[in-house]
Amino acid sequence: LLEDDFQFTFCEGCRQESPNLKLLTCLHTLCLDCLSENQLIGQCPVCQTAIPQASGILDKDNLLFTNLQAKLKVYKKIVDGVDLVCDNCKKDGEFWCSECKEFLCIKCFEAHQRYLKRESHEAKRVTDIRAGSAKDFLEGTRTTGNLSCSNPNHKSQTV
Image 1 (cartoon, rainbow, N blue to C red):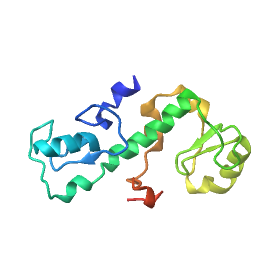
Image 2: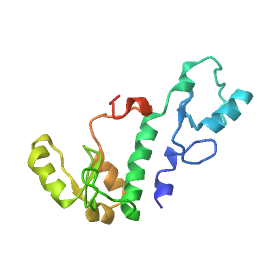
Image 3: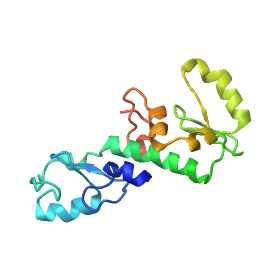
Image 4: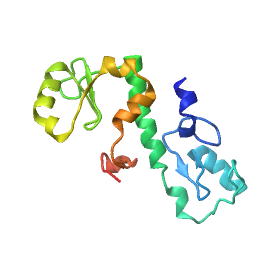
């Protein structure tokens, strides 16, 4: 069900989830494997628009899709209950803060609320997130245009 709702975040060539989605000049998104295959043909597999060989656009990550994929990965982790540990002390993670992008145990959650509540950090209980839908989770993590760079050397830098 989750995959059906978010098919648009997959590669438009192979229809698979990929951490390296590239944005073409025609605004279609391909993974590196499909891009390599179709660069030889010279056309986008979706609309047959020519893929410019020398254009820097092929180096452009599709940051919107990459960030959506990262958020959906967290949601899947919460739903599956896999590796939910506090990012601070490694105890059971019972809360998720979408601003900090961290799981929190009860003790760290209390400290978080005390020090960051005034800064609009609202950590939510994992069980409440699990009871909702992926769309609800994405809505709750929406910020005003803050996309993170997908380059691992630019970790947690906002675009």
